[in-house]
Image (tube, rainbow, N blue to C red; front, top):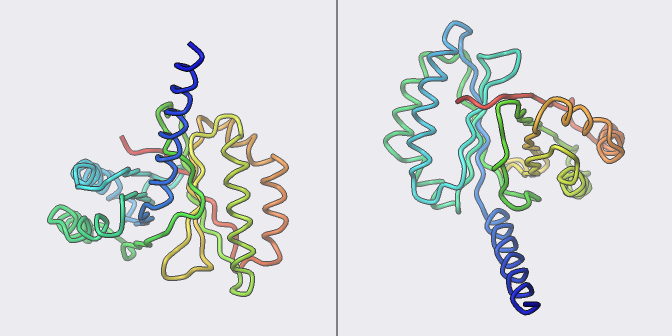
Length: 227
């Protein structure tokens, strides 16, 4: 009996480790687009079809299609791919080009696509996401001499935040083209969970340390999933 339990525990650990390893090796893309206010619904419909098609692409691990709370004409797309070749194949796919072509007339600023590398993302989660789930996408950049310090800060915050009550996901990412620019991707069960996280000692300490070394304002944006 004990041997069976030990084997099961070992298998579970191995699966979790493998999942975390795959996540750390993945290719992330964080994209933003902003439409004319009157075009938000049309854009959401196009984006839903694009996300559904993209989830069928080889190497796709996740597509999150998000609409900003309070500004429904602001969207974010979080793509996670097995590796860079899978990401590149998707970028060249017919449904990706078709989505961009149809979306373009609705936009009031260019489609902003930013490839990222995972810094600290943990194992894949989200099975318990529900209708009250809030997604947070935050751009954080550090003045160049503080890049390595900033990376360490984001890694530490990611580890601590994943232990907070109601956390479904907390991912620290590094922008490929600007290595001192980082992105936090979070998911919380509901507003109370997000509010509680905002006043935790580790979050307050991060904000305190960030202030003197940040290159811009702490750009935290709250989203809901587009169903």
